[in-house]
Image 1 (cartoon, rainbow over the protein chains, first blue to last red):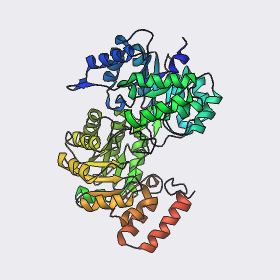
Image 2 (cartoon, each protein chain N blue to C red):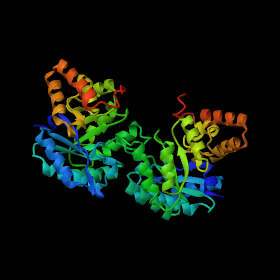
Image 3 (cartoon, one colour):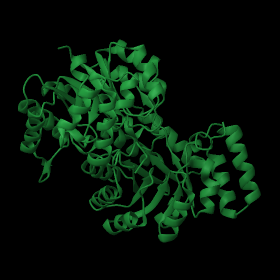
Image 4 (cartoon, rainbow over the protein chains, first blue to last red):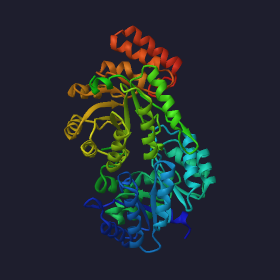
Length: 249
Length: 249
């Protein structure tokens, strides 16, 4: 299966367990096995759920290594990267060396980043690493031009879109239909992003109830809109009552 | 003069000049001398204006070293710190070793930080460094409880408040009147923060027109409200027409 299709799935964004003063390697491995056994085939190490900004480069690498070693080969592991360009390249390379199938590049942390800066940031990082990259988008600066320049720089395979701008998402997805377009706002937004062209969504819920996330994915894939809405209500009301993007609770 | 009073001034948040692949040390020193010669007595190295998130730890240290070496001893230099706690402590110590008079601790970059996490973050960083700290606040989580715990952990001397919540600022400033309370949104917001209890404001403008910033400070200090409003209009319309917090342009 091509990587792009593998990305069009439930992205389980793992938590990072800690023990003493560092990462609990056994805990990481156990969590990864739990996910793989439950049918998860796409795991993100070092997302926000995984405390990316709290991990040292060595800790992040340990998380990726343990995860890759714990799951079957048909599970794709994404290793997170971010921060300033030089460090982002270093983290991305370390993740790929540790066995990740692709890099997930966090949104830049610079508060004043503009369209031109974002474009150069993406180009400099994607152009310097030897592996596929998924962009994690948390701001409104991703334009078609930025996307085009990021693609020209290297191997961009997908976009995980985590702002509730469905029209913006739909426009970008239509402009680059060969990329994997992923709802980055989890189950609460997945049905609406699906309408806008997303295939696949991120999930923290999958860390504890992977079957529920996969059930929603199945319903979305088969186009069973009644089932989708029923599952969505159940997930939001019972399993994940506090989705801070829905503004309902 | 006590540090708290020294902080109640124009905080010139410097830019970081680059040359080739690194920091332009001569440029840093030249800029610092320009500021000191113009009467600036408080310089922040590694603010957002100074590309904190684009600098390596070594580059940040170089900026502080060159700035400290370039200015008279009565100029207070603040060295920025941030990121995860261990790295924040490392950067803070490096800044103090390089001669900074205090540390400016950036807002945590973790997107999911809550009140409890912020409190523990501040306590762990402030408690581990041997020098005064100013908090750079860019979110709404700074409550009186967090502030109290941060103060209990070590030498907290001031707060640079950079969200446009004047009521929140006024409440906090009244609760801790022995700290330096600084408008972190520059000249555009300085008059309003002054009414809410601020003494002193940050400035990027000071990097190019320090006399204008100091003139506004003088007017605020003397309580010349007509002059304040005239200067404020001039600064926003002529010198800094695009203040993105004012929503007028």
